[in-house]
Length: 337
Ligand code: ATP
Ligand code: MG
Ligand code: FE
Image (cartoon, rainbow, N blue to C red):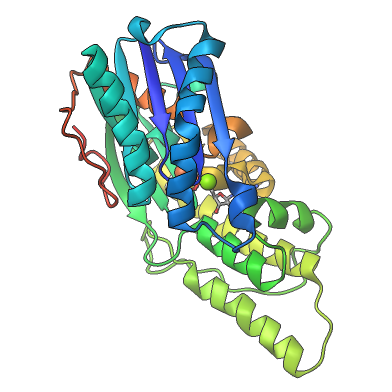
């Protein structure tokens, strides 16, 4: 089984060829980060235009690197939500054109299901059921993965996503976009105990998250420093902020894993690249006899390989989409089946 997968939901134009849902024959990613950096965040209109410029080259390169032809593919997979509508449309239109032109099955994939499925790429022993902590630029979810392609959201953020909080705090302390990796790096030189930022656990037993409070706390702290003319230490702010966010994520994820009687916990999404989160979660999993899984950095942030893997399991279950498939910016998990 060979699947050509396409991902254009945000600011990465990506195409991959995936064999049997696990061998990544190619995974080409063209990032627009340098372009959006100038504006401090992703500009939707620019993202769409750039996807149009890149998409054909990225697909050609993915096929070339995999040493396959379009005719060899068993299905064409594409992210059709959630994401920026103009950006999604470029991938969806390309995938439909190829599928229609060659009369191949089309499989529409949910972007976050892709992030979750990235865990199967390198962890060949990981099998459902397991708990998954999804932390990305737009989402913070605790997802129970009941089976391949079957998910139940048991908790989610009530306001900002974790990646969003990282990016906003980074901008406030002058680190620029995207802030996550920069805070991660700077925090290694800072003192995590320097500033006592709030940890939001919400009501007892809740698996939901809230990250707008800590974001405001950082902004208030910065204002206070300015008013009192105190110098600010960006490394300490980064470390203290990161520590507070990671503590809540780790504790809730472990609690959920135990409450649902799971012995495996996976990490997914762009923030899964965070070194402090990986380390802290690994340590806490070990103490609780939970096996931890996470994708390597290449598969944490947006890429088409993860979309091809998710599509493989859906394809096996008979999921097919019509050539009228449209982008759905607010697509819900599981809605594509
Ligand atoms: P979504 O997947 O929710 O639609 P997205 O696709 O924009 O959103 P991803 O590409 O999955 O998000 O992840 C990007 C996010 O990950 C950004 O917010 C970025 O700051 C964050 N991120 C990347 N690396 C790190 C890191 N090392 N530490 C913390 N955050 C990180
Ligand atoms: Mg991105
Ligand atoms: Fe993503």
